[in-house]
Amino acid sequence: MPFRKFKQSDIIRNTLVTYPKINFFIYDAKVYYNNRPDQDGQFSKVYSSEVGSINLYEYNIDKLSGSNDFIYPYLTKDSAGSSFKTVGSTTYSNEFTYGDMITGSYPMTASISREYMVNPSGKTNGVPNYRHFYSLKNRLDYLSMRSRHYLVSSSLGNKNTQTINLISIPSITYGSRINPGSVSLKWFLTGSLIGELQDIKQNGELIQVGPEGSTGSGSVAGVVLYDEGFLLLTGSWDLSTEQIGLISGSADTEPTWLLYGAGVKDGVNASTTSATFASASFDMTFEGQTETQVITMFANASRGEANYSNNPTYLTYGQDRLTLTSSAVFEENAERTIKNTVSSSFEGYDSPFERQVYVSRIAVYDKNKNLIGVATLSSPVLKKEAQDLTFKIKLDI
Image (cartoon, rainbow, N blue to C red):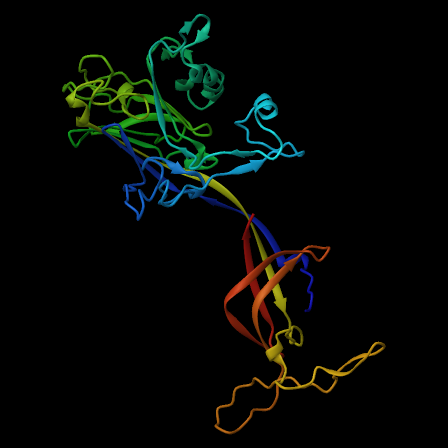
């Protein structure tokens, strides 16, 4: 098997940047991710997670205990001391003996969530009532270089005391950041659009752009934290005069941006509000941003090279492999011939012999000749001795 060393010009490293479009639709305390339906499988639901959640690794598809059991991660306690992060050191030492199996569970899922914060800076016995708000305060002030609407306290308002609607988006949905200028939040009441926010300035400000001429049109209703994956809404103007139930344990009220996304893992539903809760639905659309490191390798099979195969059918069938073998001598047959595989256009006529091989796989080795990867072609490619061929191999790192 011939080895060929990649030249410096044969290897290209680059970054592939993509902007996947993400959509969440919220209705009646249920979240739908990218319009994915709740599908039935042979044993159970196709997805073991909720339709509005992303299943890490897409494990446990169509699983049912007792029929098509769930897969799960496990480790065996040994001298290496390996364990899961969810198992503390004390538990690991006292509750498991050597040889015990430590198990985890799948699926691992993530989805958007919502926090309705009244008096965000409030504390109980010295403990903050809303820890997420406290953790974001410094970041909000830092981002004020983009817009003054990020400031925790300014002439535009004091986020320490005003009611805040915080929507959290897990990074697994968008990648490294949310793409500025792609955010759109729509509020529907009985199927009619009553408000839409967009970050049209790409500076984090969520500005009401529709419906045209509606109350609050052109006003800033909140901000986006692109890198952290948070939507912080503070717009308190009424979007409609119709009252609906969107706050647990409270009377029906006019819809505002403070109530956008009600029902997203916040305990709000028709049973905690009123029958009018199902009148509201919400649409959230944005683009993520992902960076994938890609290495491209050009494997060259030059003229006069790569013209031999280790495949046994490369040689004429029926020939003796050895001429002599004994306790002192091992001599291969030097007269073995290569099978002529050149195709002829005429019946009963063999074309003149020519060295040619079919390339079906390309192996990639490190500098110590350790195999690190194999690229398999969808169908073998003919390589004649007088030809120069180049195979392009791409690998996401």
